[in-house]
Length: 114
Length: 115
Image (spheres, each protein chain N blue to C red):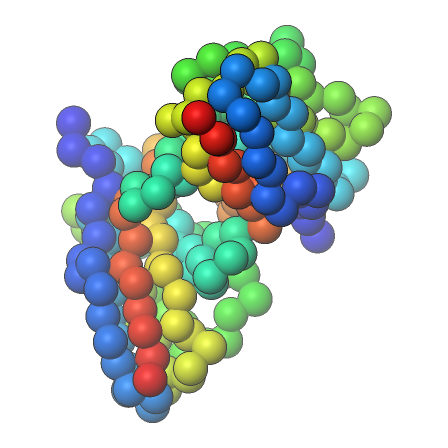
């Protein structure tokens, strides 16, 4: 059983650029959630995808968007990067929605915006 | 909206000391509760969870937590800590309603164990 994987590990971008982060869910999981963890803070929910549809969104602007593919892997896209977008971006996978589900986290992608 | 408060930002203990980390949540309905741990250089790992039933739940590495519904609390405990418990600990909650699967995290407690 493979765990959640994310790529790339680290990324440096310039303000105004666009970035795509990738996540492969744990084997058998059909739900992917994305979180932003700023330095010294707890993870903040960005959005969740279940069976390729968005299933809930946190307080993030529309320039944060996502996709889920038929194999349940997922992408997080951020347009018009701002300095405050510098953070650790975490992906978590789980099995289904509407029940007592645990989320399993990947190692994260460290994004630095200069 | 749900929220989580962790009262201790940084806790420093000697090995073999007892540990209790506070966690309070704000939500009027039924919740699922979690404690996650982030060891230095590693990803978030689930320590323990509460969904229903016995309010005293046991997790990995000797940790346990007690859900006290009347106090909206889910404190984490360990009777005797080890140096290897040095890590960041996060309490998290999600409201048990269909379509709301997001985890709301506290700001975390950094635990430093002195050998």
